[in-house]
Amino acid sequence: MKKLCAVTIGVLVVISLISIYSWHKAEEELKILRTIREDRGSMAYMIVAQDIFELSYMGDAFEKLLERNASEDTLLEYAGRYYVRARHVRRIFLFLSYEYPEGYSKYDKLWEAFYHIEGFFVGGLSRADVDRTETIRENLGTLKEISRMVRELGEYSDPKDIPEDLADELLNATRSLKPVYK
Image (tube, rainbow, N blue to C red; front, side, top):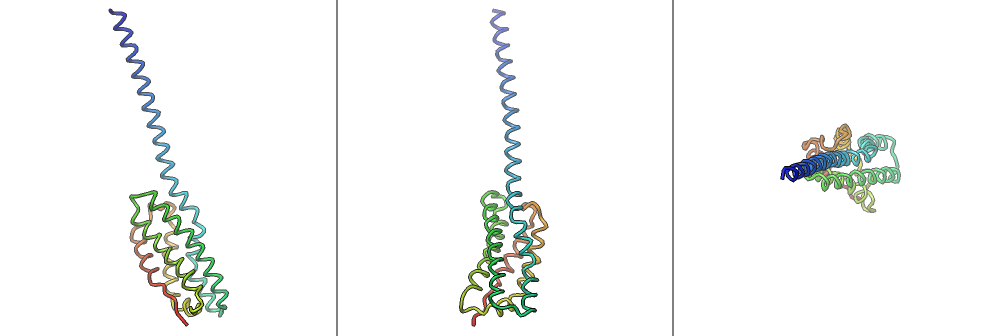
């Protein structure tokens, strides 16, 4: 009977050790997966760092183009470049809004803000009945303000650190972009 009890206790100790080891191993793997998930958002955001940088100077670029009396074709060429950059940034914020529900509201606002920028450049400036030069001239102040906010956005290396207020400001500013018709 003593042998049976000793064997049973030995088996229980071995099973306990295996369980503790498995639990510890699973905890380590979960920790690694959480780290990868958290870093994925930052890595996705860093993909568009160059786009954010370029968009942060669009107001200045258009101001210089207007000072030099650039043709509508040149303005349209720049608008096309900014459209593509805004589209990239918009898609990353859409990804972040789905990936991180805790920041959904902020990322959704930023997604919408870049949607407005994208729409302004592709829809507002590509139409034949729009006066491109006058549209840029009328929206220059807003474009410079948006550029300032995008520059501030670019200072954050982790999208989780972006303040909600900045998302609100950027969204409100982009809503006021309007084409001027001939």
